[in-house]
Amino acid sequence: MNDVYQTPLAQRYASKEMQYIFSPDMKFKTWRRLWIALAETEKELGLDITDEQIEELKAHKDDINYEDARKREKEVRHDVMSHVYAYGLQCPKAKGIIHLGATSCYVGDNTDIIIMTEGLKLVRKKLINVISELAKFAEEYKAQPTLAFTHFQPAQPTTVGKRATLWMNEFVMDLEDLDYILSTMKLLGCKGTTGTQASFLELFNGDHDKIRMIDKKIAEKMGFDACVPVSGQTYSRKVDTRVLNVLAGIAASAHKMSNDIRLLQHLKEVEEPFEKSQIGSSAMAYKRNPMRSERIASLADFVIADALNPAIVSSTQWFERTLDDSANKRMSVPEGFLAVDGILDLLLNVTDGLKVYDKVILRHFMAELPFMATENIMMDAVKAGEDRQVMHEKIRELSMIAGRRVKEEGLDNNLLELIAAEPSFHVTMEELQAKMEPINYVGRSREQVDEYLSEVIKPILDENKELLGMTAEINV
Image (cartoon, rainbow, N blue to C red; front, side, top):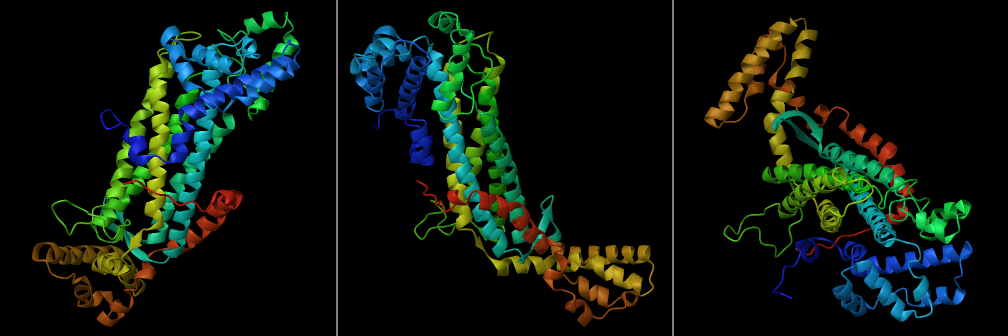
């Protein structure tokens, strides 16, 4: 099929597992499960439906006769009724009770909720594995001093592992949001054409108690705690907005991390995986471009923008139902999930293979360390009896001299020599050099990593240990 458009989300980025969740098979098999749940519920509540009819429905729940449905849809221009017809061809004894009392949204909307819920579960699994891989990385490099940056200017040092906790903590916030949204997912249930259940009032001869049981039974049969308490014909499209906002949050966290990796790769301090035969540039053979991190950023841009779609759809729905949501939902929701799935696979791949170049990190660190050490040097001079404001001004002047030497003349940083030559600092060059131990300038970075991993991350990983151990294959 090289003569028609193919979505890159399926061809290049998303996993087979996520693609299945949004596949026709998943959709139409779920429709049939819903029709079976409805028939069973109606039988249990007293309608004239036989066990034989239900068994016939169950016998054909997975063998979708797509061609029959496609032919019928060309005639009637209605996808749900086409599949009701196709199912009926396979189940002649049960065809009269398929979809009994329901509207199209009974299968369409309930299936959308089920599919999004399954998608969120897969996203959650991958997100936890990303957190797990970052935890290993943070533990390994918790004591590796490195320059920190504010405004992308060298600042008070941190450690490589501590920086990884910053990435990790954003994903933990995303996990909290995801878990909350998962806890709120409810089926539409069987509400009828405008949400009043009028057709079921007719079916059950006005028995409100039985009608109140319909949604409860359907939810239980489909593995949900509840159906929405009130609705129009559809579930509120605000649900799609909430779900896509969670995906956009994950995308934003991934984008931030990928930006940092791209900048660190420019500095040659940290590098994403680069395979033996991988080509970095078609023109410059020596290049090792951060292509996977760039892809994460690119897909994240898409997801963040895509989250606007359901928000706009939700805000423009009319009364109990309009159909101007349909085309947008068919694209924006699946594509948001497929793109985030691709992002998480890339994150797993990148995090699992991050390469740290400690000697480059140390070289950059030592070039800036004299500036970083000036506060400690100044405090020692104050302890020796010097005036703090006077010493601050001297440090500032000497730092400017050393900075000009580095930037304008391209020479080494000689700030320590300048300080040692100034008697008021009461310190020798040998004493200054003894102070230049990088680990002494990272504050509580190591301890913060240990505390964060034990107090925040370990409980999450222990609670979800059955989900751990994933590896990701990326297509390109």
